[in-house]
Length: 385
Image (cartoon, rainbow, N blue to C red; front, side, top):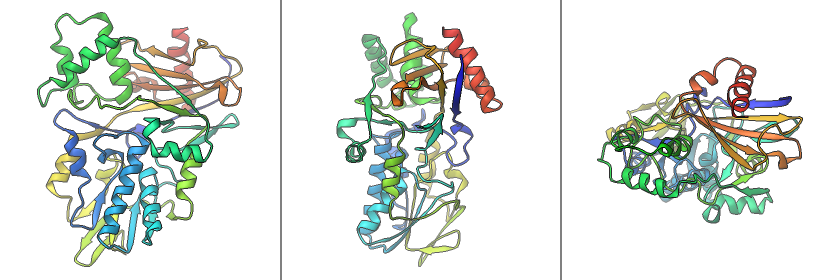
């Protein structure tokens, strides 16, 4: 398996995200997302994909929530606003503020924009390490922007092949008690068919990267994921650059403290009328709010969490994998799954993009990036072949 270049993600270990995307735990509901995004004393608002009740975990959900937060700020007459985070939500908020004559300052901890959308060169072509899809394409405002920018996309559909069983699984999850987990529903399933565990791996574990004992039965398997998805050939970077154009962005500027005062808000000593916080919920506890976040916000945050899905990009001298646009490989035990996309058409070089989730990441994703790449090649792809 002659690999010429590779790239490996570490979203779970990234201090600015601590996970891939937000999820609802067994004691939560979509109302917790709404509560988390409720303005605080008309001067502070938390926003991002985690506060969207129906499009969480998606870039256009983050985009919509960023605009909603900016609309709130302008409605309240704020003329100077600090936006914490230069991901999709933060950039969307800042652009909307700028368009409406509000001075916006974006403070970003990283030395780049994009947040969980970031591209990197892998063997001479740029690939996304984070978000790679435009989901719900026909109803996605970012898809319209991508069309304006002439970004090439291809439709993808990772079908489970178990429609009747999937419908039954969804029915049982929806009918579960309020605080039941996905694992509770599976444990109560009498004489489960052999295909059930593989279906759960492909449709829940792969889409969440979460512990099924924690994940809400009713709300953890959120709707809309995988509907009309299109994969961006290359990277989100042109779209991110477009959203960042003309903004006052301060890179390498992590925020530690946000203090609400009678005369406005101070963010690490910088005074402003209001602040829009777009930090992923995995890193939100690292921020110190004075006074503390309201009890309702803290409760909502405790009911939400971050999943873990990691990505690996492999460039090779030849295609050593099945000649199909995409395929799945299950791990040695239940709840371990990988999903693979043949990205050779990006520039003609044999390329494989893998997404991995489940308990096997605890052993697969250790050591150096070279160690991880070698382990994935030998333990996953070679074993499957």
